[in-house]
Length: 108
Image (cartoon, rainbow, N blue to C red; front, side, top):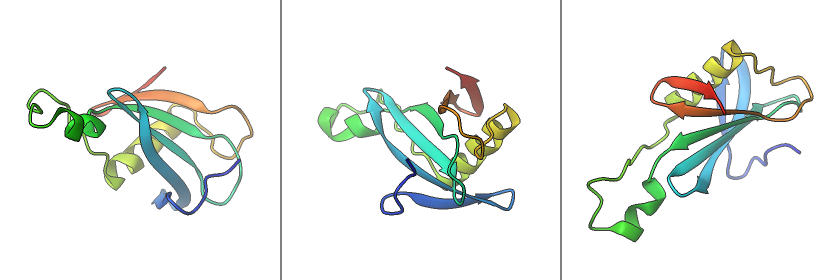
């Protein structure tokens, strides 16, 4: 199943089109789901530590929250690192799952 264009964002990395969406995963995590923009294949699933979804729940006690916002530049970097670590978005296989911490992409 491919990502719907509504709600997802296009991004180009190394002249290849990709589509990605970021959503809440569980308390303290966001998840990025990315795939190739033209070919149906292996998805990339990356868990990112962030308390951004807890901001309004815990307001005004937000000083200790990790308010990481994932930018398009972060998504491009994550995709590049995933490709370096063996993610082939054009092959048909189960999703490749990683954790993203700062600038480090590690297998989960």
